[in-house]
Length: 194
Image (cartoon, rainbow, N blue to C red; front, side, top):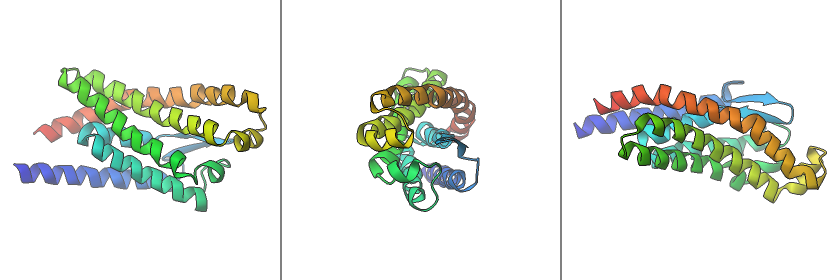
């Protein structure tokens, strides 16, 4: 039984790694490009890994995404801002690792209280917002002068601008994750428990 459980775990981890790689390679699969930025869907895969396999594996999948994003910033950026900010691993890798940790811990907390569906939903929302808030917050903190110049925004108006991006991109990404995480995670968890 333990051997079967390990095989399931490794298989799901490998499939999710492959999905994250595909989302980074296939156009419009993981990033929906818009002028100056891109809406992300890859965080959902990281969140699914975190809720189904646990925070550690969610962090691994998030780290793989972050590493690919970091490399991509040098060779094939997803936006014009990417070569400026995503070449810093604090912006490209750290938030993606934390998606897995935050989503996984939230799901564990709620599932221990027999609120699994709520745990899926809140893990999805929190994971998505972790990515958005940390990436944009670190951009604002570390690259305020370069980002303000790139977006042609007065430095005093940069944070309101970044908050607008959170509202326009982060909120829809969080809603999408909140809806898809229980839809995808529930059957995976049922299969895992067999």
